[in-house]
Amino acid sequence: MTRGRSFRDENVKSVFETYGQETGDRLLVLRELIFEAAEGIDDVGELVETLKWGQPAYLPAKPRTGTTIRIAALKDPRRGAAMYVHCQTTLVDDFKELYPGTFTFEGNRALVFEDGAEVPRDALKHCIGLALTYHLKGRRG
Image 1 (tube, rainbow, N blue to C red):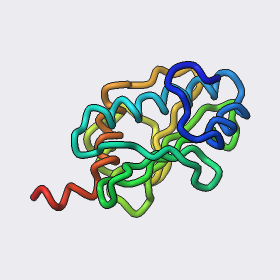
Image 2: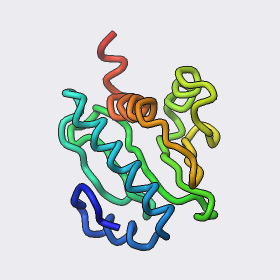
Image 3: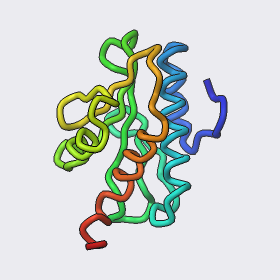
């Protein structure tokens, strides 16, 4: 389960080890895309990897840059995984406008990735970038 990038937090690694193979692999793909997206944006800088509400969470170390992204198995882990953003942001509405028909959404807080379905990598990395720079949006004018 620890293929690819090493974990920055042992507690996060422990959570990943509790998932079944298919869901765990899906979450590792989402995790890697978060790091890849962050590396491609100068304003983001270093990411913090931690747990929030018992779920792996990622946010820029630099304050007031972006909002936290959480990833987790769905309540029925046989269905897949989700990427969550703060529900009081406009992010999910923005994602819906930018990528209609590309993602499955859960309310105003999540993108859902069913097991076995292809992850739209480029679109997802763009959405991750928007989340990781969310608080900069107003400052750029």
